[in-house]
Structure formats: structure tokens, C-alpha cells
Amino acid sequence: AQSVTQPDIHITVSEGASLELRCNYSYGATPYLFWYVQSPGQGLQLLLKYFSGDTLVQGIKGFEAEFKRSQSSFNLRKPSVHWSDAAEYFCAVGAWGTGNQFYFGTGTSLTVIP
Amino acid sequence: EADIYQTPRYLVIGTGKKITLECSQTMGHDKMYWYQQDPGMELHLIHYSYGVNSTEKGDLSSESTVSRIRTEHFPLTLESARPSHTSQYLCASSELYEGAFFGQGTRLTVV
Image 1: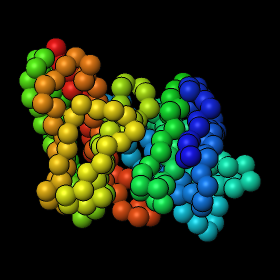
Image 2 (image 1 turned 120 degrees about the vertical axis):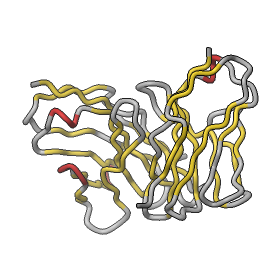
Image 3 (image 1 turned 90 degrees about the vertical axis):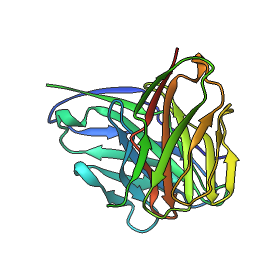
């Protein structure tokens, strides 16, 4: 069965520090992987996606993610965090072969301190 | 500009009322979804559609119903609202390889 695990419920980083948010997935076939960001009271915005090819993908707002098949991971990174990055982050896997659905993790809440 | 729209953004309604949450997309996507999300919590899929006249229930049991008469329109209806329906409802659409695109959400409060 498909599933996504985000081990960190909440992370606090200082502004300017680097960031890594963890995501592990369980999926029997080649995964389609996504990271989304959600600001309070808003919908989800797509940060980046991986389908195939280069395992390091670049997204919007300076984010990148690396797909590691051997570890079933798709961690999100940013070299230098800005205060405006404080939000909820969701990892998702797209399961096209079984109902064309998206399976979301439980989210990681990011706090940025001055 | 291609987008996905939800109305209303906020709704406070009394118990027992019938409500319809609207969702429209201009991207021409066949697949559309409704998710329910409590504040700060994960998303739960309650309904999805592969195209016109196609609707399926999601993983989370819901007393709501949906319809898909036109590709761009996917409304969600609660026949009799209850306080337990208080939540945020997110509509999304997608096409293969593009990921899901979300509306701004409707925050529903049933009093």
C-alpha cells in the first residue's frame, strides 16, 4: 500500500540557517513525488516534483529535493531559510496505477526564529 | 490565467442547513479531488472524480456528496450540516505528471 511518512512534526530553525525536511515513501512502482507548502488559512502550493531523470530537482522559492531510491526518501532542502518560509510542508506521492490519487504525509510545521 | 477557485472562502452556518461548496478550475484537468483538513493536520481525501459523470468516495468517510456534470465544476454538498462538519475543505485538480493544484480552501464552521 502507498504511504508517506514525515518523521518530524515540527522543526525550528534560525533565519539564514540551512533546512532539511525528511520524507519517506512506500510505493511498489516508480514513484511520482511532490513537495507542497501551506501557509495558514491557505491552500497547498506545489514547490517541486520528481517523476524521473535527475534525482536532484529544483523548485520554487530556492527549494530543492533529492530522490534516493535505495532509502525510499525524498528530502526537501534549502541552503538559507527566510522568515517567510515559516509554514506547513507536505510531502506526497502520486499513485497513478491505483486510482490516480495523491497520498500525503502528515506534514512538518516549520518555525523560523530571528 | 489557469487557476482553481473555491467559494466561499469562509462560511458560518447553523446546524441542519444545506450547503454547497463550489470549486471550479480553468486548467482543463480531468481529475478533481476534495480533501478535508482540520487546522494543522493532515489532508484526508473525501471525494474524487476522473471526469464528467465520474465520482468516487475517498478514504475518509464523509456525509457529503459531489457531482461532476461539467469538466470545470466539482461542487460538494452537505444536505444537513452538523458541528462535526466544521473543518477546512480543499479542492484540487490534476493531470498526469503535473501534480495536484489546490484552491484556497473553504473554512466551514457549523454552529
